[in-house]
Length: 412
Image (cartoon, rainbow, N blue to C red; front, side):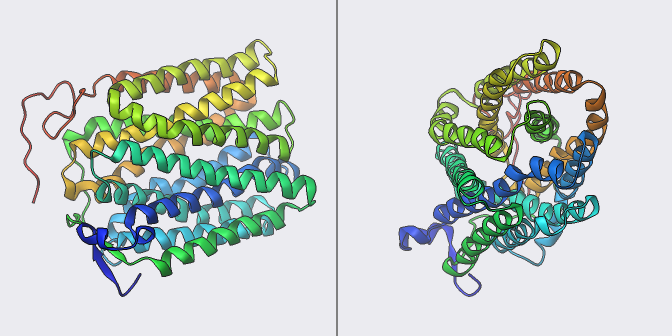
């Protein structure tokens, strides 16, 4: 990757397997392979080995989100490192920390390894979004991003199936599984480093912080999305273990169903977004999430059983797959040179709630889990209102339903 530089407009001359959209697909497989290995075992590992309670889990996830909050630092890293190289390097860091997770089964050890791995995860996610929006045309973006969601779901499916086999049939322990998942992610990342040239985007990106008033709706959607997603990530899976006593293979089986459904429906969701537009797609997502989070609260209020909880978890995960509609909305309204710096700024905004909420809601969880999910439903309602401000056909100068008729020239 270091020596060969190929312009995006010339990549049609490369073999299909060496083209940029294939590289993005390989990386879209590697990241969830590593992260799913870490996350599938996490709740059982911290409860059974590290003796965590709900408050401890909240602090762990708060620490995990700090690098996301500091993702704006990517802008300054890009002064010295190309986006593509940073993406690959971030995946290497993530793979290493997943592999060694079980070596440090204490509060301090898990906080440190989680923080380091999270730097790799969040810097990769920030740069990945930028590369996707630069390398994929606006016309193809919804469908291609839908396929990448399906690829990521396939990676998670592979990871969870492997964990179930290793845990039940082979008797592997936490350490062996973490080493296997992290090690495989490392090998695939090295392939990305060695097999692909450096791709040069058609528009040179700004290498300074970009914060534009006309992107306010995108920033707001990102802030609400981060808060809402974090509640799901931290407390929905934790509920399955704490309240219903799920074991490793049962949690993994639930994740398997989730990602199998995503593999099937994510490409269809890409077509759905392209057909109806980002406003209707996001409104559909947020309406569904309001219902799901209210139903989560009903599990604690009315004592609903494990079957309802499992179905809600699967539906919840499917709705979150539509989040890529926020990316395509931004792609349509953005100055092309703003994509990389705005991706970093937006990722930081996305993680404001992700850093602040887990410890607070973790303490509230000890008092009333139903209130935690009621708060999540409120955030989903705010997201729904914001989504209704998106025009049917957003373009620069028509970023919201309030800005029709304005003309925006690209910023030099």
